[in-house]
Length: 84
Length: 415
Image (cartoon, rainbow over all chains, first blue to last red; front, top):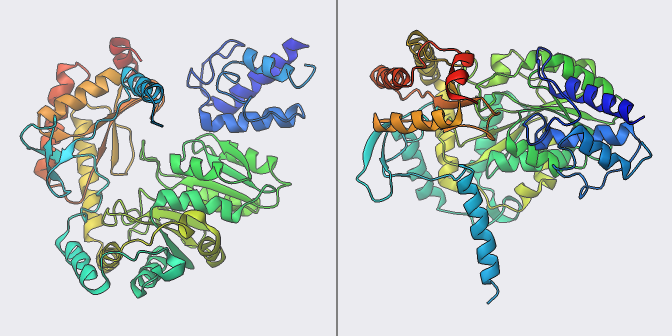
């Protein structure tokens, strides 16, 4: 199950944040915020995607750059609100 | 004492970490008026050094233009120094209304409302026209002031890849159930000089029933055949619902900004935009000088034509000299160096050669995209541009980057 969520998130991040011709690899451990792939502005739309996709509400104080800094971190965050 | 040692120490540590990260911004004192040649006192206390200025937003060279300065003096004489009021109490003079009308005429919009700056126009606009049932769909590289303005608004925030129309269309499809949508973009992006594809954006907005907002701060006064801005350049005059722009760049460069567009949007800003309601009126001398600026650029396109010529000349010479510049037609000319340290070194050595141009690097631009951002002015003479190109070529040769492409520079200097 966790593997599926990883794929959903990796696919979304590739589609949403990388250029079509980008050859950058995204794994569950790739640094998203500190690695410059997702900036703080785009983090807002990532949060919106997670909330819509998983039908949850993430409080602003939980939506920190650290919590969004990798797919694995995001999964940890999601586990606080869902049973993924 | 309320300002304890603990507090002082905390702020000191913060400042230290800014310095350690190489992000501390040092301000250089300029002892002359703004222009293509300025006198700079740097480091502090050293004798003034005359340098060619390649980093002002003084696109039309009007910042110290005699007719503009004279109009400011006249404004002081006839309308005083300050208004000691916000606009809606006792801060609206005849000249404020005159400038708003002239801006509407120049930009070919229905109405205009002045703000103390474009930063404040962007901070006020979105919250006034959009609510929680609405969506803001913004280019991912919009200016920081737009990002701040959107954060103050309850509407849902979506963003699309920089100038990527297919991605914008996806977002428009995703947000179909929202009450109102607004596509939000810079007309010209300040770090790259990229010009937003406004015709395609307007076509998509029409198709999906969305409004279009453009921050035209880096184009009002000179982009387009009559200098009206990106909407003229792209052939979409009358199709932009809200333009925000500044008087602080090409239009004299002092202060002030505006929202210009649909009359209901402008009027709602007058009634509800908090930065408008709670900020002091733009001072009369600035207003009087800005009226002169609009008159000058409405009567003649000479200055924007010279800016266009200078830009073409500089871009061609830099390319011929083997420097890696980002292609385009805008007077923002990014000289790509990719490595942050290299950008800082080149900027420092340019200064030693009498050329003032600043390096930009992460986090202002993406990692591995460090550059010197050159900004051309109508005030520059060919000899000044030649001297700048020669300095770039000399320093470029020293660092062995002449004729080198991105991969080769990164291979030598790293990201």
